Length: 212
Image (cartoon, rainbow, N blue to C red; front, side):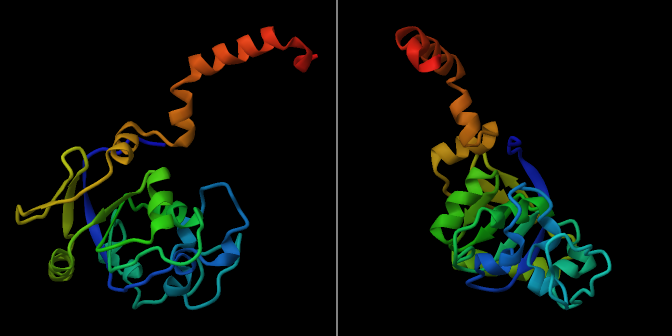
């Protein structure tokens, strides 16, 4: 997992509440567990005018011109701004995989579903909770200004708007540490690699019959 570094990214506004994981990445794409290649099918039912299938070439599929991510001004967005209860519905790690593979590093909303919230952090995606009035103000500013970008500073837990307004947010210290250091569950375990190897050696010496 890559270390999360401070960056300034364009914001894409998804003005929709209760976006569930099946809308983020539809169920037919869950057969693969490679963690990559899901970006082209992110919000598949909203982005395209036909029904997508696994392994399909999406380059010639008809796009929905009204969907926000199909609009030229949001093509390189790295921050998704959305409404309450984002990521509700069934549990699937494919949802944060798809968001990250598309290019998003941060999702900002008033609230998130618990399972999605945990899955996102474990896969390097920063979720930021802000108050409803702050979210509404960001929506207005994003719509008014093309190329609207936010400065995301995880180390100091703050977002800086183009006007210089500072929006502070809370994040669990352990999750923050993992993002800043680029540690997923395997990376955390491997920090104790020497201790694990020592235990394995002692285990072989004390119970050699188990390894014959």
